[in-house]
Image (tube, rainbow, N blue to C red):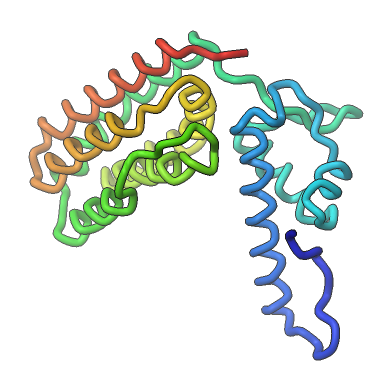
Length: 236
């Protein structure tokens, strides 16, 4: 069980240790509550009660409050006056199409710019990110696929960063698109293998400085990913 957010008995803890313990606890609570949402254990529209979550996870209410606020900022929860938090709905097909239209406008250009500006250090970062996910996940629970979901977010964020456009990167980060899209994808079927293959093609062109090829590889990847999501559709 997760330890409660309490002070250490005996020898007095330093403020730095106390903050570190709270940070670790909050991160653990964040991942556990997010797993409940991503797995559908907390269904779209379900009320999320701070006290009930604290009891379920055997933690104090303080980290739960912080976590629910963070999940609201990411769009996984909504908050209404006098009603508290509830689980946000899964994206509709039209919302998925809109999201990919935005990404298709921004990310191919970002990949081309990143390829034009590539340096040995940047290329090493791209290759290291690809190496961080050795194989596609075999299960459909969040515990199985959270690694590739995190990789997907990191990879696209890295390309945006290497484009040299902070405004573009911030625009993509604000959508929290990877969280919402993976809620749909892994309710339906696995598609980790094509995602990783498409990332590898983007990375090969980008690290070699082939701007047009990198741009087209990103466009092809986003188009294929969009089509995969739209074939699955929301299950709720």
